[in-house]
Amino acid sequence: MNNKLVQKVSKKAGKPPGALVFIGKKKQEKVKIHLMDYTASTFTEKDAKSVEECFTYMKKPTTTWINVSGIHDEDVVEKLGKRFGLHPLVLEDILNTGQRPKAEDFDKYMFIVLKMIYYNGGTNGIEIEQVSIVLGKGFVISFQEREGDVFNQIRERIRKKGGRFRSLGNDYLAYALMDAIVDNYFSVLENMGERIESIEDELVDNPNPKTLAEIHKLKRELIFLRRSVWPLRDVINNIQRGDSKLFTKKTQIYLRDVYDHAIRVSETIETFRDMVSGMLDIYLSSMSNRMNEVMKVLTIFAAIFIPLTFIAGIYGMNFRFMPELEWEWGYPMVWTIILLVSFTMLYYFRRKGWL
Image (cartoon, rainbow, N blue to C red; front, side, top):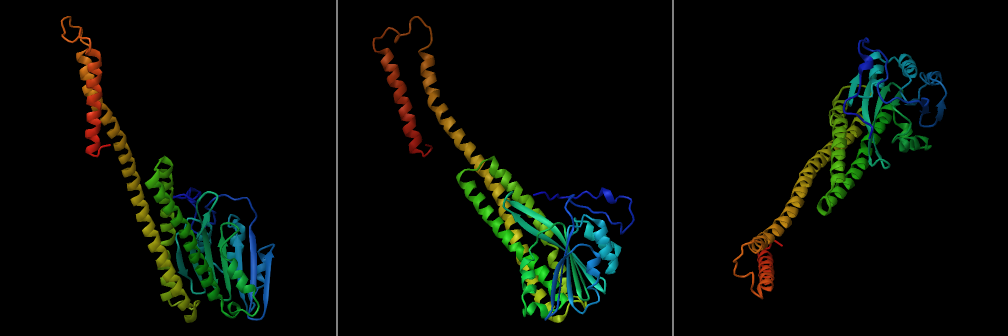
C-alpha cells in the first residue's frame, strides 16, 4: 500500500488560496476524459480527445456525465472548472488528493469528495484513491486520480436502452456513483475479514515475526479505512437532510440507504480494529507462553542434573582416605544412584503435570 499517513503539501507553501497545484503520487500517463450524455430515448458515449469537446453538451437538455481519469494535469482541471463555473478553492481541493470526505453546497452546484478503496491481490493490501464529484444542473463531473474504478455497472445501466436509469435525473447519477463507492467497501472488508481469520489461525498454531508484521500492516490499513470512511456518514447525512435543490426528494430516499451502508461499514471497521488490537495481545501472549515452555524444559533439565552434579562432585574429590574409593562395586553403585535419582525426578515431574 503506497498511501501515506501524512501527505506532503510543501509545494503549496506560500501560494495564494485557490492556487492549482497537484498534490499526490506523481504520474506520467495521459489524462483520459470519458463522456456519457443521455436522456430516456437518446444516448451518446465517447472518449473526448480534448476538454473542449465536453463544452458542446453544456446547454443540451440532457444528463451529461464527464469522468476525468487522472488529475495530475492542472490545465485540464482548470479548463473544466472555468467553463462550468467552479470556484478556485474547489479546483484546489480536487487536485489535493489528501482531502477528507466532505460535501459543499454552492447553490448552483454541489462538490462532494469521497475515497474509493480497492483490494490489491498482488500486494495483499488496500489502495485508496480520491474521487471528487461535482453535481450541477444537467451534469455530473467526476475526477479520479487514475484510470479504473467501480463504476462499470453504472455505465452498463446507462447503456441499456429502455432502462429506468436514463429516465432519472443527474442527481440520481450522483447518488449511484456514491452508492457504488460505498458498496465496494463491503468487498474490501470481506477480504480483510478473511485475512484476519487467517492470522488468527496462525496465531494459535504457529505465531512468528511474519505474523506480527502482518498484524501491523492490518492495523495501518484500518487507520486509513477509518480516516476515509468515518466522515462519510456525516457527509451523506448532511446531503440527505440538507435543503439543496440539486437533490430531489425522490433521490434523497435512496441516500438513506447509502447512509445505512456507511454506518455498517464504520461499525465493521471498528470491530476489525478491536480484533486486530486483540490479535496483537494474543501474539505477545503466545510468544511469552512459548518462552515459558522453553524455560520450563531447561529448568527441568537443570533440576535433574543438580543432584547428579552433587554426586559427581563428591566422588570427584581427591581425598586419600575416602571409604568408597577402593570398594569393588563403588563405580556401579554410583551409576545406580544417578539413574535412580534421575528416573525418580522424572516420575515426580510427570505426576505433577510439568512434563
